[in-house]
Length: 204
Image (cartoon, rainbow, N blue to C red):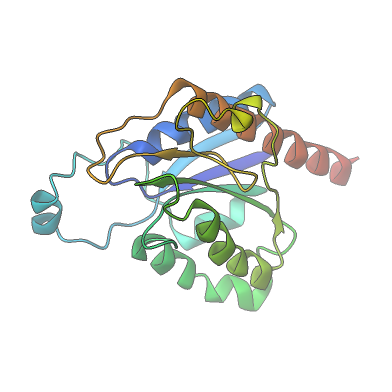
């Protein structure tokens, strides 16, 4: 049976969703059953209109119980003041019941990001998300410098050893670059190989 990985995102202006599609390609290339979900929105429709937010991606809204089904998770997180936005936090805060039962212990987790600027907190967002994984007993899998584009200083490129990323500008005008997409694919493929190896070994 193929390993199952859920890509769990919040994406207001679709930068994270664009990365998630590339992460999914990498996971599929590694032989993983990969599905994209979005966390519930906490903002009102009126406020989303004021923010000129486009329609949500056409992917299902995840529930806490859905987490029981997967072997691993890649969380796509748009940074808010150097940490996760309230939508992601609200969802993770609702996993207390799973924590009490140890349901997520031994499952794998990774992260990827979108920030407004180059130093907008992609790494600090990882730091402040890892605490949830630690409390659940989950196994955090960083990207490392697995893609050569992470060494490229000739242009703005999101991502770090902690995960793929993009830099969107404060108004969301910068779109995900080809190099950022390739980094996201690398992360998906490498994460998929780790999870698949574990699942195959467990069932051997």
